[in-house]
Length: 336
Image 1: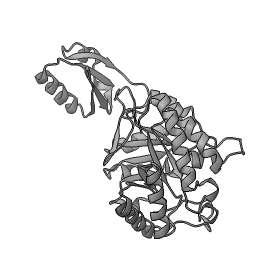
Image 2 (image 1 turned 60 degrees about the vertical axis):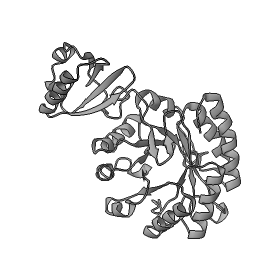
Image 3 (image 1 turned 90 degrees about the vertical axis):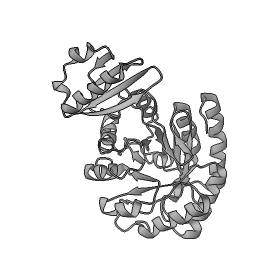
């Protein structure tokens, strides 16, 4: 349920309304715009008398929300959420480049790539310390050593870091990182979502390989219900019958999400396609569709990469992608 309050409301009535809602055992999510204040009610709202609330002088309108996702719903929060990591903003008309290797392999490698992507325009460094792999015999990442090396790269370049967490037992290792990533395989790992939601950090939530948009938003709801309001949705392709690419990039998810939710939406063209030469056109498509950023895999020596070399760009290729995507952004009115 949402309650829209008038701009010139009486503050004492507003406080009484908040106290009454709290007495019903409900939580409130407040979103204040230029002309009104939207109060989202979370919990069992069946006890709330809509006609009674609507009759209050300070109330402009009351609506029940039919969708199962509440806090992620744009009706709860009409204005776009802007996630801020230091001086970097994701959402609200800006476009962020997130780039780095699929996995951290050595100190020299991660620092070299970090410096290169920063010079090309990246604002956030991505890199895998823990790597979920289909085969138990494949490279699983450097784990805690990988996190240490990511922090070294941050010291050298100043870039904020995003990396994937795979288990709540590793949470303490992620305390010094800037953004926590929930991967596609863990999108519906609800215990992990609840634990990460309590960390007080921004979260990149990747879409599950066969997840619907609503299921994806319900996973975001898990994070938000635990206090994490800085959720960044990442479209990374879904599994279809098509085999010419690693996954099928659902570019239509971007405008759909922009309509349904206030959360920022980014696109991962590297995992979607699995092919380096498709990353540029898919990145341009993401920008044109209204995405708030792209997450791109960049490696200094893709043929020798320990993970996903086929979809990784060289630094000079990434620079070329940024140049062409920026032209698209000018056309659609986005800021870098």
